[in-house]
Amino acid sequence: MSRVVALDYGSARCGVAISDPTRTLATPLDPVLQPATRKGFGRLVALIGELEAAVVLVGLPLSLSGGDSDQTRETRAFVQRLRDRLNVPIEVYDERFTTKLARQSGGVKGEDSRAAAVLLESWLARESSHEPHSADTPEEP
Image 1 (cartoon, rainbow, N blue to C red):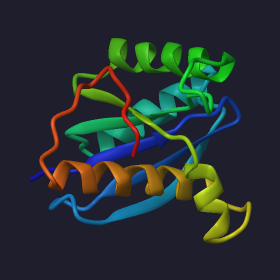
Image 2: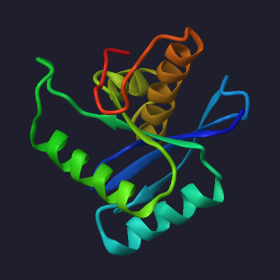
Image 3: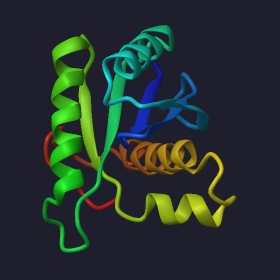
Image 4: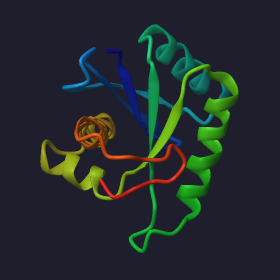
């Protein structure tokens, strides 16, 4: 199998987590600062390349009702930028509640990457159950 990189996008910080090659465990990494800037985005693209990701998973911050918010639209634009630069599949996944769960497991420091790890763990669990999914339609974790 191959590794999956999960991103919890925010314009100030982008949390990053990576799966092990068997896609069983999710490990948070250091967040990438200012991923909306050219320099920050370049660092993020380089990191994804270094990690040899087979899939990039981006948390989609839907509103509680499941609709789009300003942050959702900003994240969708970020996903499009990634698709324009990377040659790997990029999936979006409903990230509602991941930051809250990450805070419960250890405070504010590093919560972006812990949120990415929570997102990745949820996605890996769904993948291992072989549920059908669509890369462009977020589902409840």
